Image (cartoon, rainbow, N blue to C red; front, top):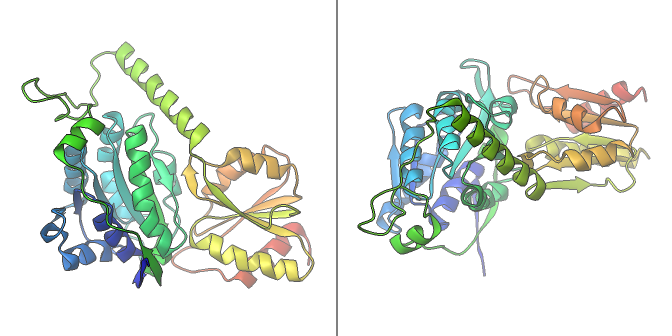
Length: 360
């Protein structure tokens, strides 16, 4: 029987890293994600699995340690919160440019600047749209429960190694801090040196003994080489869009009105949908699980079915831009959001829905 433990979402990240054979975690404490490192330090996986856990002197250092570990074909990861991810953006761009796999957990807090330590969803632009410099994307996956936090570490590494790209687990502060029952999957052993050599021939250590090393770099020395490489990246991102879109739907089959929300907002919107359904209003919800790639085709299909859509976010409106692009003018698209750590209630969302749709 699978083991089930009551834990925070942040703690689930740590337990998942240990149980999924992660080779190294490099991080720096920042609220509201500090429990990730605290749990790893408490569990001491270096004594049981050999996993390296290191508190770097800064977020800059931690992301560059991830770069180094990933270049050797290792399963390496970091976690931070919004201002810390800002500091990591240059390193993330370098990792994308070097086509290296890693997992980065962002437990969002309010901003800009130091802002607040309260929950937010305002890192959408920073992560889904790239964040660092250059033409690149990270795969961005958005958990909505503590169980998702656990499961998405393993899924994130699968995607990272499949496409040789950074994967960002984008969680809001509520998902990081809430406590829920989490089912722990069986332990996966860390890969042996032979398995890494087999699975990561591109790594700096990926050549057989005596045959030198691969060179890992994101540097191009001329315009034509850089353009060719960027087009290669574009082809990879198009393949990701074609094959890796993931979303969930709630009562959309006959929906006449649609909410679009991710993370904690999706959970709150489910309750709003239930309230409206009890009143005879056919509302539904689509929750993007992958934010890049975004479920634009499904939203475009539903836009032709419903009278309106509303993007519900803990921000001033970031994902709503992608919702509007996906709807492509087929229906009106509204937005409602809160900031500073203020959390909407289902009743508040219903009230804003009525205002937008003139259903008072």
